[in-house]
Image (cartoon, rainbow, N blue to C red):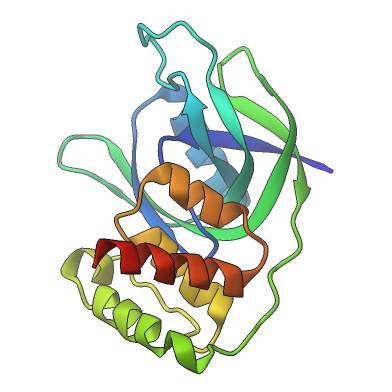
Length: 196
């Protein structure tokens, strides 16, 4: 087990996925500063219930999902609104064993790392998903994330599609929790069939 800082969000990050964040709370500014100095990262976990913002009127403790993704900062910039903007990239999944909040309200967690998913060639029946991913990667918003997936790998493709498609976050979390990339791909195909 290892202890890592957490950044709970109302969204899910997948391995290989990227996300833009605006940082304004002192606890997260300190976290980002520490990560940049020490070349470390932090865990992204889905908020199942409650609020993570300090000063929120919601007085319930946030409930955190039991599976998360470790994130590294790959870019940062000062934004026109005077906030710090960072781009994070998901690396590996972890299981949350226990967590607590420090005095500065930063969540810390004991985590167990989840084995990387097997590398499996994309089956022929999923060729259309490769085409869909290529179309998504051409979208201007997605293009600025500078993603570089291994197109032939089912795990990478299924994770990126799960990240980029407009799917409810609870469903995204279910997809993240799967350890079989072929099953994730099948579930994505079923979801797309439901929308058509």
